[in-house]
Image 1: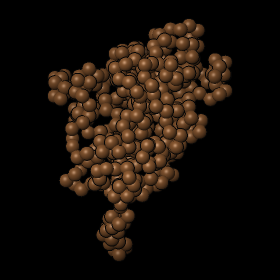
Image 2: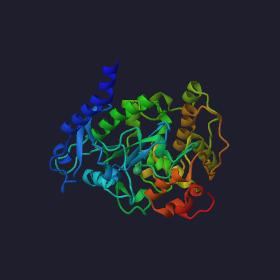
Image 3: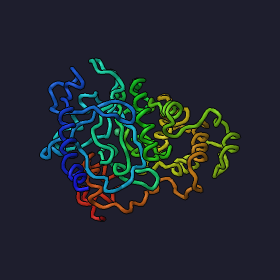
Image 4: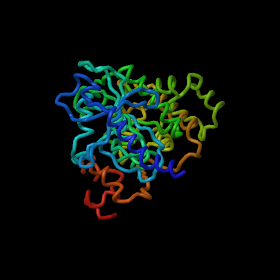
Length: 374
Ligand SMILES: [Zn+2]
């Protein structure tokens, strides 16, 4: 027994150290011709939920900020949050690993798209280990949960987002389609993640879902339906669930199908499903429309409520929400409980402090947002 203890305590860590060191290679060697200048990062080969990719090796202690992560503080992973980068792969990796605490941001995974240089789509790089908190969702809320970085895994999809100024109406933007190889890799690793952590379908959501006020990603072209149909990831409706009768027969809808276009009823269903807002309900409707219904078409990125919207919101509530209809009303600020000032600070620092001042997390923002309530 004593010998076994010696091996476990002393030899195994030494062996692991040498193994990771020996097999670590410069990132410039893993992705030839992609990085210039050399970001001085080492990676090692990793099996990421069935996709062979790379993982960034931990940085030395004096560069601990470069990985941009911290502790989950014992909280359980229950969300998978999708993003697009709005930057190319090189810039994204540089942003996620710069040795600075100014606007620190990161994600657990970055998945490449085919870029003009010799970078193929569908390559996966792990930046932050899953057991640690990456800083990708910022101030965020879904259902009764807030500060979702603690309880989520974040996947960044390399995609330039859209053409046009962010201040333009969504309809006036031209979105870039996703690389099929990138979506394939995303589907495979997402499938592994949701199975491993038992993540509910309605907890696989986009950044714009958990921060609808100002976040645009992953946008209306993100193929949520494909992820559901091909990889069993996230929430969607099956082909045989596209009628009111089918939904009534298959589920037990908590409310009758609303026959008319009614904004308040639509919002009540969306809030019951999980969306929260900072007071701008139109952004919640937009986030829903970009994610679901016929509204993955940019042409429907508007505030017009159509019958498809009423049906999808009603059907999703029937399919995925097991509790009775909530009494949450539009504009209700979710209660922030169990969070501390220290919890909120990294999220607050991650983005413009003015955003925090106006956010639903205002009571949490303490001295950094000059709110005295906390
Ligand atoms: Zn994002």
